[in-house]
Amino acid sequence: MAVQTLYEVHTLKGGSWAVDSTYPDRDGAIEVAKSLHGEKHFQAVKVVKDTYDPATGQGKEIVVFDTASKVGRDKPAPAADEAPSAAAPAAPLSPAPAARVRQKGKNTKSDYAMAVKVSVLLVLILVGGLGAIFLLHNAGGIFQKLF
View 1 (cartoon, rainbow, N blue to C red):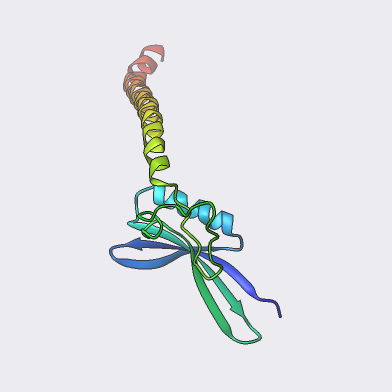
View 2 (spheres, rainbow, N blue to C red; view 1 turned 180 degrees about the horizontal axis):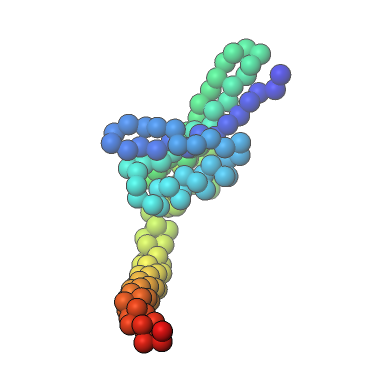
Protein backbone atom coordinates (compact mmCIF):
# COMPACT_ATOMS: atom_id res chain seq x y z
CA MET A 1 0.00 0.00 0.00
CA ALA A 2 1.10 3.57 -0.62
CA VAL A 3 2.04 6.07 2.04
CA GLN A 4 -0.96 8.16 3.08
CA THR A 5 -0.49 11.92 3.58
CA LEU A 6 -2.97 14.35 5.08
CA TYR A 7 -2.59 17.96 6.13
CA GLU A 8 -4.29 18.83 9.40
CA VAL A 9 -5.22 22.40 10.36
CA HIS A 10 -4.78 22.84 14.13
CA THR A 11 -6.12 25.83 16.07
CA LEU A 12 -5.00 27.15 19.47
CA LYS A 13 -7.73 28.52 21.71
CA GLY A 14 -7.68 28.81 25.47
CA GLY A 15 -4.20 27.26 25.63
CA SER A 16 -5.11 23.97 23.94
CA TRP A 17 -4.66 22.81 20.35
CA ALA A 18 -7.52 21.18 18.45
CA VAL A 19 -7.74 19.71 14.95
CA ASP A 20 -10.00 21.99 12.94
CA SER A 21 -9.99 20.16 9.61
CA THR A 22 -7.94 17.90 7.31
CA TYR A 23 -7.02 18.32 3.65
CA PRO A 24 -5.36 16.12 1.03
CA ASP A 25 -3.24 18.99 -0.35
CA ARG A 26 -0.78 21.32 1.37
CA ASP A 27 -1.84 24.55 -0.37
CA GLY A 28 -5.50 24.16 0.53
CA ALA A 29 -4.67 23.52 4.18
CA ILE A 30 -2.37 26.54 4.38
CA GLU A 31 -4.98 28.81 2.77
CA VAL A 32 -7.58 27.69 5.33
CA ALA A 33 -5.07 28.20 8.16
CA LYS A 34 -4.28 31.73 6.94
CA SER A 35 -7.97 32.61 6.72
CA LEU A 36 -8.65 31.20 10.21
CA HIS A 37 -5.71 33.16 11.61
CA GLY A 38 -6.98 36.31 9.86
CA GLU A 39 -10.36 35.99 11.58
CA LYS A 40 -8.66 36.49 14.99
CA HIS A 41 -10.83 33.85 16.69
CA PHE A 42 -7.78 31.77 17.59
CA GLN A 43 -4.52 32.52 19.36
CA ALA A 44 -2.55 30.62 16.71
CA VAL A 45 -3.04 28.28 13.77
CA LYS A 46 -0.73 25.63 12.34
CA VAL A 47 -0.72 23.05 9.53
CA VAL A 48 0.72 19.62 10.29
CA LYS A 49 1.71 17.19 7.54
CA ASP A 50 0.66 13.75 8.77
CA THR A 51 2.27 10.86 6.90
CA TYR A 52 1.29 7.25 7.64
CA ASP A 53 2.80 4.10 6.14
CA PRO A 54 0.32 1.24 6.60
CA ALA A 55 2.95 -1.37 5.64
CA THR A 56 5.18 -0.48 8.59
CA GLY A 57 2.52 1.08 10.83
CA GLN A 58 4.75 4.14 11.25
CA GLY A 59 3.45 7.69 11.30
CA LYS A 60 5.28 10.99 11.05
CA GLU A 61 4.10 14.53 11.71
CA ILE A 62 5.84 17.68 10.46
CA VAL A 63 4.67 21.24 11.07
CA VAL A 64 4.65 22.99 7.65
CA PHE A 65 2.94 26.27 8.69
CA ASP A 66 2.73 27.82 12.14
CA THR A 67 1.61 31.29 13.16
CA ALA A 68 2.74 30.77 16.78
CA SER A 69 6.33 29.83 15.92
CA LYS A 70 9.07 32.42 16.14
CA VAL A 71 11.61 30.16 14.46
CA GLY A 72 13.29 32.05 11.66
CA ARG A 73 11.72 35.40 12.56
CA ASP A 74 14.54 36.51 14.86
CA LYS A 75 17.35 35.02 12.79
CA PRO A 76 18.85 36.87 9.84
CA ALA A 77 18.39 35.34 6.41
CA PRO A 78 21.25 33.01 5.35
CA ALA A 79 23.82 34.40 2.96
CA ALA A 80 23.48 33.50 -0.71
CA ASP A 81 26.63 31.34 -0.64
CA GLU A 82 25.30 29.23 2.26
CA ALA A 83 23.23 26.24 1.20
CA PRO A 84 20.47 25.17 3.62
CA SER A 85 21.12 21.75 5.13
CA ALA A 86 18.83 18.90 4.15
CA ALA A 87 18.25 17.99 7.81
CA ALA A 88 17.08 21.49 8.73
CA PRO A 89 13.33 21.86 9.25
CA ALA A 90 11.34 23.87 6.76
CA ALA A 91 11.15 27.57 7.62
CA PRO A 92 7.70 29.00 8.38
CA LEU A 93 5.93 30.62 5.49
CA SER A 94 5.67 34.02 7.17
CA PRO A 95 7.09 37.06 5.39
CA ALA A 96 10.30 38.72 6.52
CA PRO A 97 9.93 41.44 9.21
CA ALA A 98 10.55 44.24 6.69
CA ALA A 99 7.90 42.81 4.36
CA ARG A 100 5.42 42.59 7.24
CA VAL A 101 5.91 46.27 8.04
CA ARG A 102 5.25 47.32 4.45
CA GLN A 103 2.31 44.95 4.22
CA LYS A 104 0.84 46.34 7.44
CA GLY A 105 0.90 49.87 6.01
CA LYS A 106 -0.69 48.62 2.81
CA ASN A 107 -3.41 46.77 4.72
CA THR A 108 -4.18 49.84 6.80
CA LYS A 109 -5.45 51.71 3.73
CA SER A 110 -7.56 48.79 2.63
CA ASP A 111 -8.84 48.40 6.19
CA TYR A 112 -10.08 52.01 6.19
CA ALA A 113 -11.69 51.52 2.79
CA MET A 114 -13.38 48.35 4.03
CA ALA A 115 -14.57 50.14 7.18
CA VAL A 116 -16.12 52.93 5.09
CA LYS A 117 -17.85 50.40 2.82
CA VAL A 118 -19.21 48.45 5.78
CA SER A 119 -20.40 51.65 7.47
CA VAL A 120 -22.24 52.78 4.33
CA LEU A 121 -23.79 49.33 3.95
CA LEU A 122 -24.96 49.34 7.57
CA VAL A 123 -26.50 52.79 7.17
CA LEU A 124 -28.34 51.62 4.05
CA ILE A 125 -29.63 48.55 5.86
CA LEU A 126 -30.74 50.67 8.80
CA VAL A 127 -32.56 53.19 6.56
CA GLY A 128 -34.17 50.39 4.57
CA GLY A 129 -35.29 48.62 7.72
CA LEU A 130 -36.74 51.77 9.23
CA GLY A 131 -38.49 52.52 5.93
CA ALA A 132 -40.02 49.05 5.88
CA ILE A 133 -41.21 49.43 9.46
CA PHE A 134 -42.73 52.83 8.63
CA LEU A 135 -44.56 51.41 5.59
CA LEU A 136 -45.86 48.42 7.55
CA HIS A 137 -47.03 50.68 10.36
CA ASN A 138 -48.87 53.01 7.99
CA ALA A 139 -50.13 50.27 5.66
CA GLY A 140 -53.06 49.54 7.97
CA GLY A 141 -54.30 53.13 7.73
CA ILE A 142 -53.92 53.16 3.94
CA PHE A 143 -55.89 49.92 3.53
CA GLN A 144 -58.67 51.16 5.81
CA LYS A 145 -59.07 54.28 3.68
CA LEU A 146 -59.26 52.20 0.48
CA PHE A 147 -61.84 49.73 1.71
